[in-house]
Image (cartoon, rainbow, N blue to C red; front, top):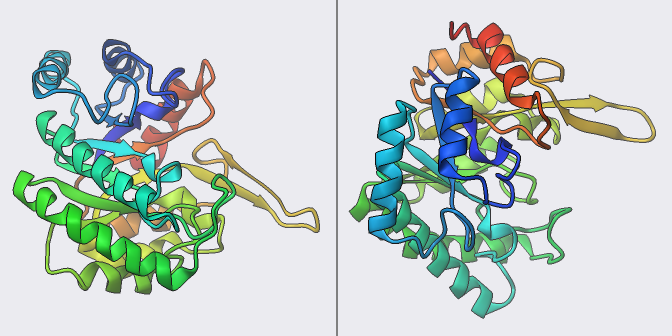
Length: 281
């Protein structure tokens, strides 16, 4: 497994305005081997970034010695492929098709995307579950041929979107498409907040897991229902069993830490935590 950090974990990453040079430098200086880039409708890397611009970025990556083979997008939070508004759905599909092309220009082999929203604390729209499923299927049917043609894995993230809260449902949805390019971008920390056991998801999803993202989550169950994302190793993720499950399915890819919000020591703390848990050193 390869130790990595998300572009979103840098000071200006969430706004998609951290320079590529800065992100690469901080990645290396803090002991990470890999960086996961980010693409949005605006910012440093966006859906209109040209092939020539991407080739210049790839040259900087190669010169840095940092491993970069994936890129993430959260565009679905604002422009959802499952929206009740047909024009928004169409725009979302177009944006994600462009994101796949940008991924290819950058020589990235996987695109993380949020597979729409049923209900979420960060999205105002509520969509009936069966309609969301049908709309997502329609969107993927339009995105997947491009992913296959460009040889980019299209990876659905499990995330707090009111959608796919069962590994069996997610597994069967992926299997319903006749393509090895569709898979899961498993976010370990996101599972804890809805009372799921990460090792079981890993066992059930198995080879459908194309990439892995991590964070930690602390649930202090009481009548106030308090909870929070926290430093890796300080929360309720059963790391020993989770890492053993990843080993059991022979996962060899990147382990991307997505740590928010940014502070001056978050990268160094996260790097040290990964070394301790995964024995990267």
